[in-house]
Image (cartoon, rainbow, N blue to C red; front, top):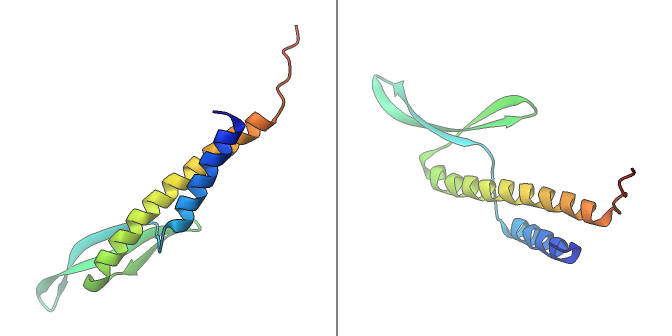
Length: 102
């Protein structure tokens, strides 16, 4: 790819990233807990933050929107990786190459 093509591709990725709405990172964990002698569903978001695992209770009503936010988060992570790769390629394309000395 030419330098111009790389820059265009990176800008497209930036635009796609900014178009994502309400993305989240982590994993939705669905399990059961015993409460009052009955087994009831229990859901939480598990994520790492500053080297520590954080969990957040998720109600049944929040499961759908959270799943959508997590899917958007996967897209965001892929786009960020692509932007990083393109940035490295752009930097390399802008840097003059040294001739190999004999």
